[in-house]
Length: 550
Image (cartoon, rainbow, N blue to C red; front, side, top):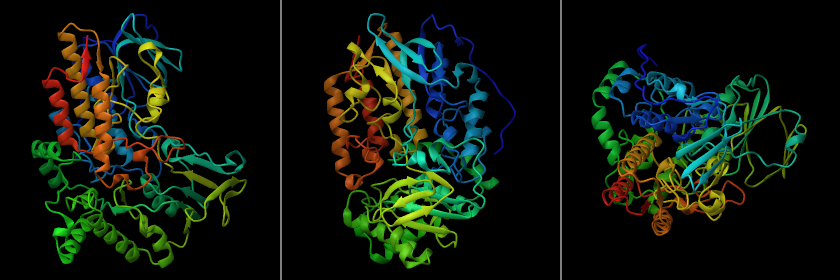
């Protein structure tokens, strides 16, 4: 990574307060990840009085917490960048095709310092409650530090994958070794040298961590419940000529990203169905995409996520590759997924399947022999006991709703958001919820969020919210709130669109199946970014149709 050394602040009209919160903010933003950073930038540019509160001691959101070995973005670095500033795009240079957690943190800090945003962020501060005062038409937000903020707008930039799914195994307290969560990894790191390590989970975090831990540990045991599909990243350093070419062509890249279902301009989209191609043509196309690596594999044909027979052609190709890579046929069979490709988030890896060829790596199928409990020396399954010094829990997140439900959010008449969402989240466009005036959720449930390049979805939402606040301000109104009918119709639409895809075919965090007791509802909007953007623009062009402005 390289940057120029300048650091500028363009904001002079707004100010932050440290401990005296007696006057009302225009907006309080919860979270200093990529959503909170950009939201702060935009509102300060409007001349508003804004404060961000952040639980961590630094910016970066999910990248601040997910410091586990091998943590790396699965969107190409040159696209996992803000597009709002031409100067920023030219100023920053990524080092690799897929950037590491550490480099992403450098980038987030660079953005904050370049635009002078740090004074408006209060770190080590967790939102405990946010209650709407109907008489004053203000939100009252309390923190674990004892702060009380009053704000006209309450903006939740809490992230889609920020609430960690914590282990609930019997006997956790009896384990005498060390244990860690990938989503809350210690800053000082973990020394695996010579240790017997177990990792539970085979989602993206585990797929990234496994090869790195395997190189360090004395022995690694991977506990897999459900085999997942993973495509090689083919990560490599970015050459100067390639970087210059991309920087010169960013306008075209962003234009393609805007038209892409997933908000990625680098992905080459297939133009016909898999079954329209001959077996030889499919083999050639899949091989080309496997060799290139990355998320483009799933975009080879238009019907992979809508037609089971088409999906099977892609799934079988990956399974054949697993059998080709993994030398032990029994291990290869266990690693071969039996689920629909894409119904769980497809992983992007750097040597995941190859790691199982190492003499110090074992695979345990806990789908057939479940974990019963943790014991003093390790893990007890129905097949036996595995002695371990360290256990790594890579069990994912309470996606999209977990971070919001962790805060005591109450709207009109004291309505609790977690109660309203007990049978699944109800939102209008993933941006607002009826009964909660002047509250916005960035990339909330019911929006494309995790089914897209989240940076593109974040920028779209932040721009929409900024325009909405400007509209309210200019119209001399005080409140905006989703109406019940629009919310009801959108919530049903999100569900209906998901049912037309194959993403509903298995239990995944897309439907909350990884969290005990969570209602099985498809959480993100699967209709694609272009359709979603058009709907949001249509709402605005019709005078914020579906909202009550008063």
